Image (cartoon, rainbow, N blue to C red; front, side, top):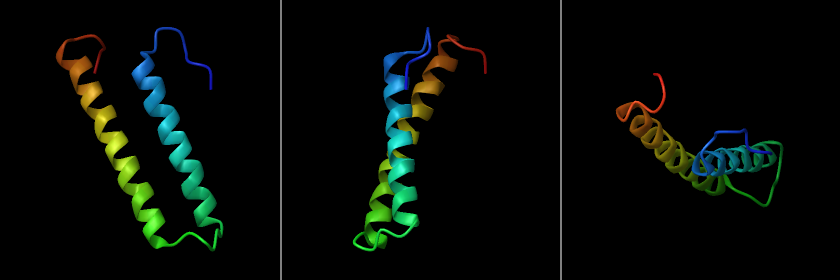
Length: 69
């Protein structure tokens, strides 16, 4: 994934993490028998944490009027 011009590196990093977690989750969903529901919960928690960081970053941008809502 090549970052778009003007996109902050932290945002690109978070998007890559979300993409990676989504691919892992898909792999588990499609039948990886060695992984359990616990592994899915861990992935969900990771994704939730990353999305929280992204939401906080977005809120900061809105607060400082760096982007339009």
